[in-house]
Length: 68
Image 1 (tube, rainbow, N blue to C red):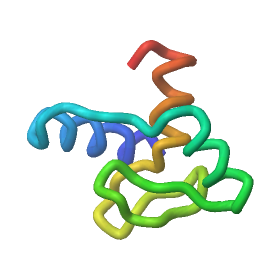
Image 2 (cartoon, rainbow, N blue to C red; image 1 turned 90 degrees about the horizontal axis):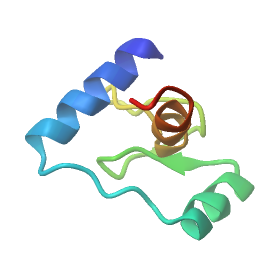
Image 3 (tube, rainbow, N blue to C red; image 1 turned 135 degrees about the horizontal axis):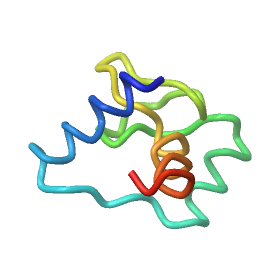
């Protein structure tokens, strides 16, 4: 998952930064057992999309835990 996070943060730098989902949207996705990646692909909550980007749940957990 570290590689997916690295790819995701690189993607942010080349795609005008990032705009994470609000807490309610993320909670709705997780309640449904799914999530989105920053490129809007539908993924597992702790997964990565077909383009190699980590899910928003994983990205936000990483930022909260590590600050990056």
